[in-house]
Amino acid sequence: MPLIEQSTYTASRVFRNGHINCIYAALFRSLSSVQYHRERISTPDGDFLDLDWSRAGSNQLLIVLHGLEGDTNRPYIRGMVKYFNNRRWDVLGVNFRGCSGEPNWQVRSYHIGETGDLRQIIDFSKSKGYKKIALVGFSLGGNVLLKYLGEDKHQVPDEVIGGVAFSVPCDVKRSNLEIDKWHNRHYLKRFLITLNKKMEQKASAFPDQIQLPKKMPRDFKTFDDLFTAPIHGFDNADHYWRNSSSLQFIPTLCRPALLVNSLDDTFLAETCYPFELAKARANFFLETPDHGGHVGFVSKNSDGHYWSEQRAFEFVESIY
Image 1: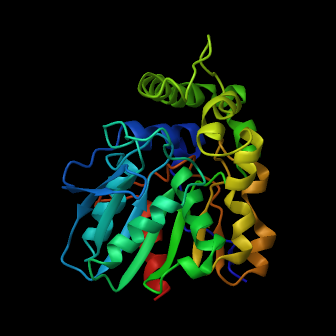
Image 2: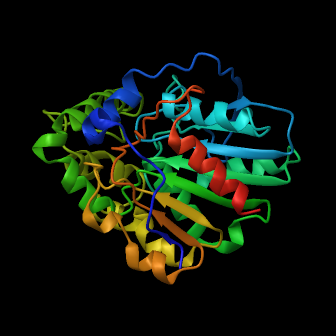
């Protein structure tokens, strides 16, 4: 029964506020020592993926997936890269399509349920000779990770040992209702500034496939109804959210996976804490710290690492 009832994460007083924990980790953490080597690979549909390597000379690899409108330079990605590098793991940071600083070439992009690109990246990593591959994902990237491990066991190679997912809106529809509430509106506004800008660029590049409304979306439902769903083959936002939610794939996880969702994460709905599934599924581990915010988990220590990095490493080391 892998329900972890006592989390080891403790937050100092100021960071017991979920918003402060989230914002501080995103804006005030500096990790300048991480060095990447970028490699671009082609996709079967004539597009590209930009991958950032940070090697330690190992035959074991961690693949890290960022959140919505993130990239491999986000502090939570760089912190994870540094922690695993220092413990003799190679790390591959994934920039989802359109997130590497250059627009992707096709009308389609990335989304919260897109696992095809991850499958290609894992196959590509296997070709480099890695014997063990672990996954870590944050928010949107965590949903992709869980969906990948649960949707088709036959497409998960033996080299993949499992993964860790932090701050995951695994019930996408209900979480999107949460982020639309007043106390999350500043986050929503920031997301939509960059999402809308990217769609304006897409409309310019693909005028026959994308038509812009008079007013650009101010919420995820409108954005996904207008853009994400039709571009990626869904009927509407509800169809996209329903098919993409990783919650439905947790019962069929084919590798051990740890989900860490803090109880003060203002992005998450109540259904994103699937306690009963953790009690009933051998491959699903659930940890719900009282604090941590959304992709926060700020820690104060002499090494400068965050608890999330230590926790991911402990879990990965425990499953092989």
